[in-house]
Image 1 (tube, rainbow, N blue to C red):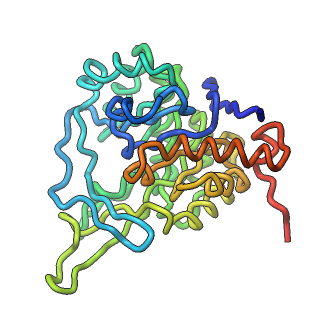
Image 2: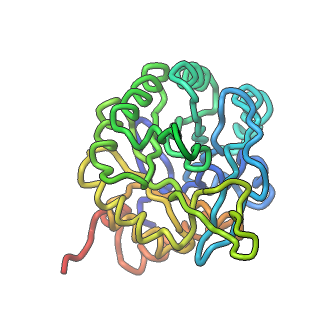
Length: 308
């Protein structure tokens, strides 16, 4: 068997296939359908310091080869997660990565500090790039991940509050990912997660309204995979820290694209809605691919593009 172990800072995963944030709930909901210990790790849906109701429905809209979502980070809040969900996740024997979004610098510091003290949390993913909480019109604000200085500041605050690895989740909706990725690296990020969803719209000609309960949402699914693979390839050449690739992974061959582009690990997202076992299917297919290619480690595959 090929060696599938992956290191993200001080965190070692038994295999490189994770369940992506926002598509796998808090993890415990999937325990009856999936043996969670088979995953390289699971990233719980993004938590805020206080409970959040999210956006008005409808929150999902199907698109060609993809999906728009405008959930708006509905979640139970960090305190409730630590009290109600984390004790159950400790039984799963798989690394738990907690995704957080701080609405202020103080929020980020407080949440990272709480998670630092929490038994059973392996790493923190800092969501700097959720597109479906953006405001529109005059005075609209940008995502943190659209500004290198703001990204560096948020990552620095999180890293100062915890000894656990901090993973910065970045937005694809920028002119150049390199300076933002490098700012996160300089600030102490152990790894980068690329890419979050793309900002998109879907309008109903009959009603002349958005098909979502708000004007825009985040586009995910196979439709974005070529765009995501390119951004992983481009960014992996500009930083020394590992990159977790995600965006439209449905099959093992999709994951291989990201590894060839330079990713150290991958996260399966939208595919989980159709099949909760999608990450395990991807993992088994990856094992078969490595056997057929006679590769004894995943590292042999990473960045191994045959040039034209």
